[in-house]
Image (cartoon, rainbow, N blue to C red; front, side):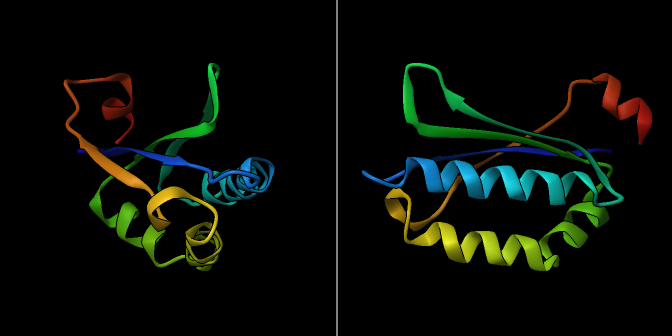
Length: 104
């Protein structure tokens, strides 16, 4: 079964462009991970300081592997000083039988 989540975070004043750069760099790295099925990063259209990332991995093992990647640690360390609360708010999702489950 796939592992899916979304992460939300808000850039602090003056840091929107840097957060955007960091998430763009991270997206390229995560998409190259073997177990990643989807990594989509967005800025809210009506609130550019608010970011939303939707992630899907083949399974729990792929997500565990994702957590062990150096690019994720580097991103989280850099993000800590640039966003409200020091990091992302994560929401775990349960699939209702999407097309990505057929890929797993």
